[in-house]
Length: 315
Image 1 (cartoon, rainbow, N blue to C red):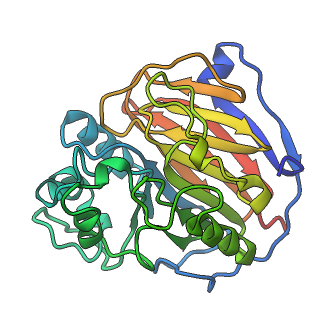
Image 2: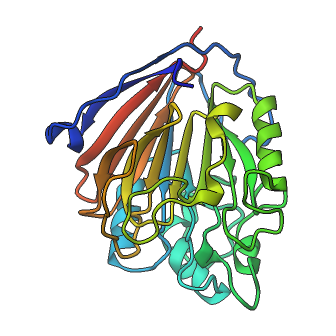
């Protein structure tokens, strides 16, 4: 993947601190196939960016979660994707609407919660990954699966949003199809990636394959051969930090600053480029057929990290 993508660091907090930029060069040329797989219903012009907000570890109702929601909604994204832990602390049906629906009801369809959704367009625009706090010892994933209507069996799935093919995994240890590189879930991902003809492929999961947080850190079980299988970017959460890493020629992001208490960092691990844990925030992605633009903004709307990947369907 190192020889297929050009990454241009536009701005980052790390650059201000004198850390070097990374430059990757590449070429990709694959046709965009809008009929591939499950596609959210929203007309997309290929020459216009599709805006996706990515939030992680956000599902704890309170001032931080509200501030992040206000930030995200101000961007007017077409879709929201999450890196899990949507419903703290134990995935209960009695807390899920307060933790999610009160902020994002307009993006969830069908929505059966109690909060107003005056701008809900009548199709789903909210695509969550499952985190460990979305599992309950009595009911498993029942609250999560009953609250959302998602593709396939809903624990893990794929969805095409504009020019990006998203693969939403379940890295929780209770996943019946397994979470290791040789699991049934991993085989599903490898097969889906091999069949994908979208311009970009992004994997989202909860447990970060690589992280330099002092709390959880890297998760060996989720260190799958993503680059070999054709993934452009891997986005995770679990650690309540933001971090950008370069491993195996692709970008890994930890995005867990959506509302739950923030974590401290340990020593930087190999490949760590940018680290941030001073405030809550969210990731904004503007996607076209030939460019992915990433901006991590905090709740003061300050850009902490910004970069682009170019290539995709570079006709």
